[in-house]
Length: 318
Image (cartoon, rainbow, N blue to C red):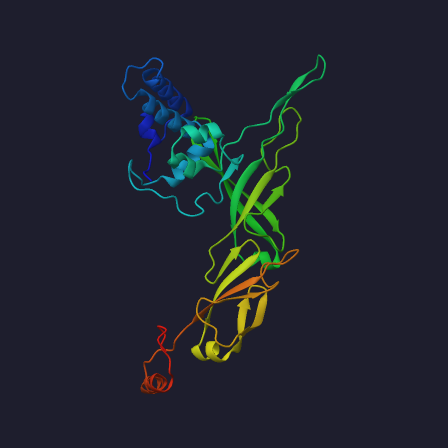
């Protein structure tokens, strides 16, 4: 996927104000609108202009785009890093089907979880009718340690929200919240913080903040829902003869029986020893037989004895 320079598309500087961006869009719209333009590629250019304006005229999309796109050039191969949007606070959770159909894969890859519309409405009140609008719900993805799912915790969560300053430029405003993480939280679960979204208008209540939970990459474990996956190295004699081995889990040590004749690639399922919950998930152990190195004379001697005395052909011709 190629990186798109939306500033270049509109012909504005990266520090352009909201008014600068609006003027540039109007100028290009007059030039490329298919109903009036004589340019042969007017329709395609107009789609590019619309897409660039959809990003740069929206403080949230523009703030995220500015942070992610630093150092990239137009046309350069681009893949957003995993969890690049963690810690960004957005209003809503997606863009409309109309946007999805009209804009590029680059746009969808970056902004598929953002957007959303307010829910303002006129509340009838006789001759004293006034405008009320509940505050927008905000959405943010946060990264937690997998261990938090086993114990629960209170964590300080730092969020960044793009907004427009008095000069019409996008800036990132930070805030920190103390959030109670319940024991048994799972990947993708949403924690709702009431009243922590956008403020309401006309006396209406504030919106809520939706925190979508994701786990940081772990050196040993992988979570899949409430299932917990672990690659378990075993010695050749443990795999051949069977053994009871200790496994260190976030919730404490566990002894697991390796069946006789276990092979690399075989999976063992331990019921109820995954991420806590109602019901708890399972622990899935992927067996990996590891050979000791033949780096000493005695080790080589043992391997040579095995080669002579064991009638074994790993390629199936025994």
